[in-house]
Amino acid sequence: MKNGELSLAQTDRVIQMAWEDRTTFDAIQVQFGLQPGEVIKLMRKNLNPSSFRNWRRRTAGRTTKHGLKRSFQVGRFRCKSQRG
Image (cartoon, rainbow, N blue to C red; front, side, top):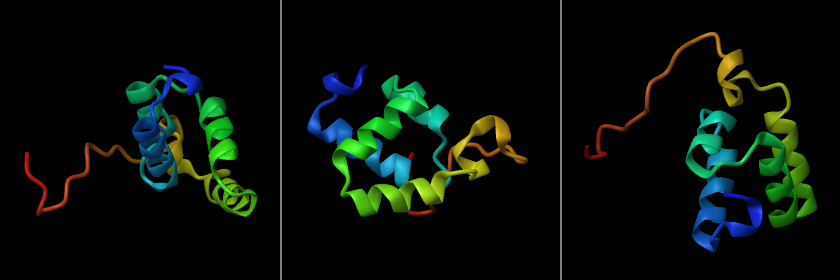
């Protein structure tokens, strides 16, 4: 999917996933087909300028956002109250 093809609900989900520290850009790419650069464009378009700058500061250099840079392997996280 490209940025223009995402529904409002999908756009909201991508933004939510991008804000999460442990969700990698690779996971967003698998689920929505967006490259990291496309995620950045989507965030810039949909966030307030100060929120976008804050997000970029958080993600810049963060190893948990890039699967290959992680020093640990993590499976899918599931809290105790989540079914499945």
